[in-house]
Image 1 (cartoon, rainbow, N blue to C red):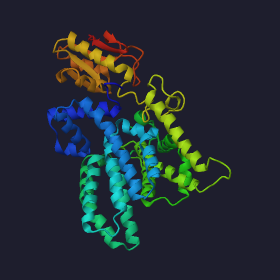
Image 2 (spheres, rainbow, N blue to C red; image 1 turned 180 degrees about the horizontal axis):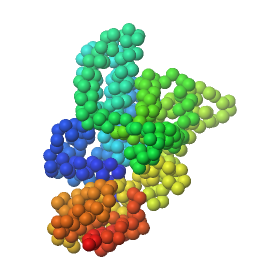
Image 3 (cartoon, rainbow, N blue to C red; image 1 turned 30 degrees about the vertical axis):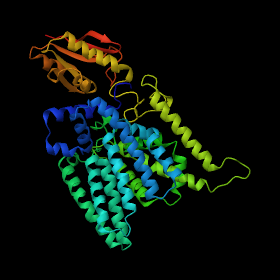
Image 4 (tube, rainbow, N blue to C red; image 1 turned 135 degrees about the horizontal axis):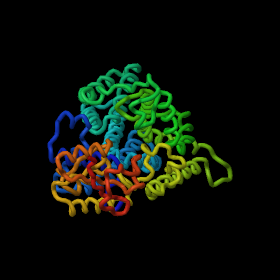
Length: 467
């Protein structure tokens, strides 16, 4: 991406939220509700003088590296796996294409996963430890809660099942200590989310058509949701499933088993405030452990007079398939995606698994042209002119022109937004793709908008009032 950042959420949310909070202040309760630890890191970096684009370009790969280290640490120190086996699961948990998709723009989730795996490492090694040992456990649960809501749900599920398991086996000391160390983060999590997220409730599928989710996720009914989830799960993990199924026949570690069971339970619940696809994406990590662990069992099967064992063949299969899919994902452009990610071939979930990693809210091939178009607006209009921006161009405008000239209309009707903006007598412009080339189901703009400049596929339009 050269000088540009990758990731839809990175550009559409992290950039505007950070700039807004730095320049306009924050409402503390709204700020806490977004699990703001990543924003604290990003805002501190930007406030110190680092440009936000540079900060995001540096922080993103660092986070991926720490995630790999935390996965390795959990495998090595927690599950007592060998160095090679631990390194293999770290490779799979960071470079499998679904993991790359998560690292593309789900940076808060990635930070939460780093702390989750460190927490699990402490959790698995707490037997016969003193009460002081639970202090870092308590701190880690708070860090997870401050990092990401969905990862917090997974963590509290593991904690709850662990406490129940220990009570059944009469380990009262361990269950009490874990309960007490988890209470501060649990109270905070429940309090914040009862005020913000939970009021959205559950999705009502009693009417088969007209679901509020239908326009976004395509779910018109509960069976439709389940079928879509099943298809998405197969699309994401079909390359790993043969090895995962082998591992399921073995003794899966308790933490990973809880993670899997809890995720599949959550997939059955039609929450209105979160896409069910997110639970599937998070399954990448326990499934990476299961696929890696299957290699141990395959290593026990020997073929006489053969240099290749089933273990070597399976490991080679995972490495080759991961490298092919991941490099195809990294190197191909959105206009010419790798076959597995092409919506015209296999990828029917392009809103969840984008066609290429070489994009943010727009394609890498349009980034320089977007900058050129915004610079033209800066150089050829007066300070009273207004620029209408769809959500995908809002951050680009914030980084280039004065914020008082920007009117973000989100995903709404641009004609209505332009008519409203023009009431003050200002000249009104809009940035979009040239006619016939637009993304997001709007290939061309309505007739009131007339192109006055374009660079490549990106154009500036002038709004002509309709009397």
